[in-house]
Image 1 (tube, helix red, strand yellow):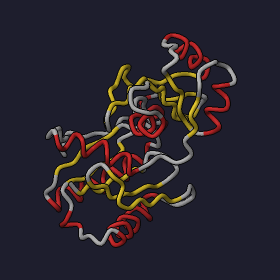
Image 2: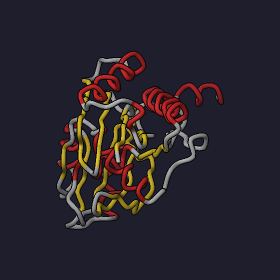
Image 3: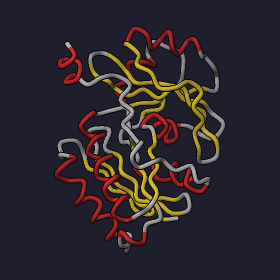
Image 4: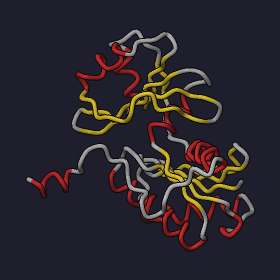
Length: 225
């Protein structure tokens, strides 16, 4: 099954083609590249490198957040447009699930942490199975002061904190839990997780698939105020 996966919920822009649970081609642009201006070009590049046409795809995958509000909207809009044009299925994958899958081996639990700004983090608890992630505790917003308590509540020798190097460095200094630093989110991992769901026909409704924001954006909060 050929999947085109897009991950735009972080400062990195990532696009990949996956097949049979393997990454065929993966392109990750460093921060500083505008997602809106560069996403379609990145898609064209990975498809060309894979020797494929868009019509060859069996499905599409997209990271739905939490993360950058504008980045999530860009990725979701482009992938939805492609899904409608190509008449293929779409699967949205949580950025926390992708981070956890990148970080731990099968059978282990992970606490992924994504910087939410304002001294807060998006987090949850996941357990990795064979190319799939089980959500043990759903995504939530934690203040920096809440993180240590959250970790201690689920303290286990089989659990790993995962996040960017700066997050891991700060958190592991305050806890006894091992940490796994992940510099760049993997669009390929997004595609692999989505393919598993597609095999089970666990598709998302293209019109019902929405961003996983967890909290309101600054613009919405200001408008409500």
